[in-house]
Image (cartoon, chains in turn brown, purple):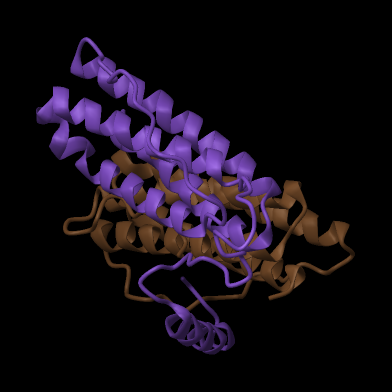
Length: 141
Length: 158
């Protein structure tokens, strides 16, 4: 995968995560709002960083889709937490795929930092989901 | 992941390709590495990370030997480190170094043990992230993923 293609895919995943956290936040109880809000902010920051990286390379960043297909219906707190874990897993996979596609240390730093964020938040959401493994040895794989 | 229909099709193909490539060791030794006795042993840049990972694993063993009641909390983390050491050793091109003899990590209380493990995880994650920034492409994903996992361990050690 080319660096540009990998950057665009990571950006598309961040667009989807920002869209998805809109649904997540609306369905969660107050106790979990801070986690959802900080995740939403982090995904927006990563989206902006990817857009900036692509513009610096004179490429047009992919736009967000008007809507996305949900992997399952979000009907309450439990499915909202499951969607949040799913969003973190999805962004982690794209950041992981970006790592071998870029060589500039700054790009690698961005990818590791975003992968770390997604792994940490994914773990936090899974701790709130019964029957899910808490930690996974290779996030993004 | 939430996807548009077009991305879903592309993603499905990518997922199939990934399944086709996946083996029991996701970060196998690249084919281009020289055989251990084909030439004089050279030090691989990965070696310090293997040595450090082995030290982290030993620190968990020391903590669990002293405070077995922490097993429920840190046993899953120790298992991650064992997987990390396996993967890093699998990617190592040159010779490994034997585990050093040293004093056991002996914190005075379980709380001190957890504090020590938190510091260890933060240091390890920072070291791996820096190595990832400058690594060859074939190793960047492994180092980045291990860094992310070890940093996430802080959530379980709070």
